[in-house]
Length: 79
Figure 1 (cartoon, rainbow, N blue to C red):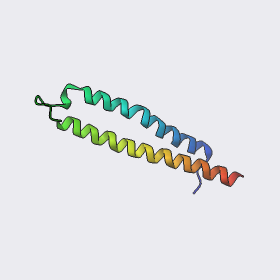
Figure 2 (tube, rainbow, N blue to C red):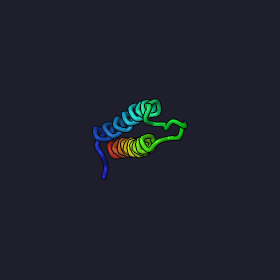
Figure 3 (cartoon, rainbow, N blue to C red):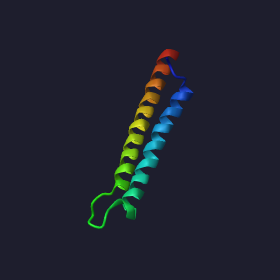
């Protein structure tokens, strides 16, 4: 299957959006009072959000890579 250029651009933008939003969210979670216990140990609040952030970055990266590959394939087939 070959993606159209429009869909490919959309997928790349989703990947970029993911890398713009989630690192900022990670900083907010890190600075949240609920992230660390009194002794400085990470809490389940931090671990759960870290897992969600990591999974989202993996999905966003994969989506962006698929968009780039789709763009290249569409360009190759058009020429």
